[in-house]
Amino acid sequence: MKTLETDALLSVVNEWVAIESPTPDVEGVNRVGALAARLIGAMGGRVERISGAPDLGDIVIGRIAGETEGPGILLLGHIDTVHPVGTLAGPLPMRIEGDRAYGPGIYDMKGGNAMAFAALAHLHALGKRPRLPVTVMMIPDEEVGSPFSREHIEREARAHAIVLVVEPSGEGGKLTIARHGIARYFLKTTGIPAHAGAYHAKGRSAIREMARQVLAIEAMTDYARNVTLNVGTIRGGTHENMVPLHAEAHVYCLVPLPEDEREVRERLMALKAVDPDVKLDVTPGLYRPSFVKTPEIQKLYDHAAALAQEIGYPVAGERIAGGGSDGNFTGALGVPTLDGLGVLGDGPHTHHEHLLISCLVPRTRLVARLFETLPV
Image 1: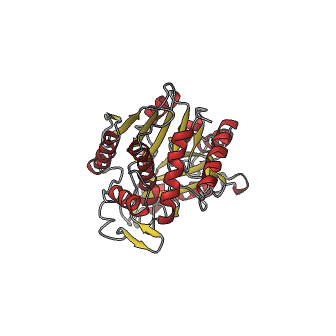
Image 2: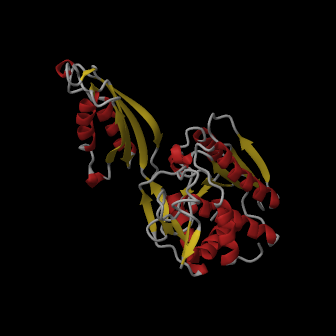
Image 3: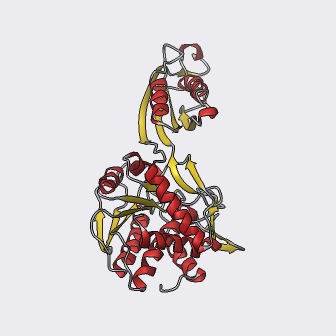
């Protein structure tokens, strides 16, 4: 790809989007991984795969030589989506409406992956190399918190000087210079079953207890500090004529700083059942640590913003993002991490997910220029 042209880049994006790859669909995720591996090989890169997680696809790693040796750039992207198989043929077909291109995962984050690969292919076609060695890492389980990939991401990050993440840009084109932490908790209540008609008084409802806990948990939200607790899923009971024995809930917590995470964890783990005859269990789940802007990250952002200005498609500023990414892991390690380098658009995880076609050429050029010029 010697020249970066809109139609060609959109075609490349659509090749990624055409393969449906929800996280649990191992075959679909690995088909996207095979596409990534083929593209890496075509530009002279060395491909590695890491498998071993049950019910998850492979991590695909590509290593591209640079003009210099030593610690280089780790480029992070994920190849799984939240959209189930059948979304393409149903509520979210690939289509173009004006400047918008629609499709499952096109914004989060197959568009960014496609741009990053196109940027590397562009340099390769021109007979150039990145200044630093580049390791491309495609993750199969980011949408479920990267439980399999986290240790591999962190190991790679420790061996690199810089991390670039091609998650989508937010708020009209801002780059992400920090991310809040994300914590998950699982609640289970166990009551006493009884016939809901004949022996209702003998029962102790797990659902009623869970309802009380839901109100207590969501009351911990503190918008002034951007600390939010959301009970996102809940289920319980087996039949309407039975006092329910079990109920379960899943809590998603936004915790901007490590001290916020500690406070939320202490409060949730200290919860007690209101009804002494009902048992309450609280179990911590996956946690993405927060990372904050450092002078090194500020330097990365300033350099990217200057390049974007030269290209004629300025970034819209910097932001602290509430949603998690694999950049949380690398930034928390202290490795300079610049996130949100992907496409502009909107509607992640919805049936109106789209990217802005007009961003493809300038944003791909920005990523290519970062490869050419880093470190600063």
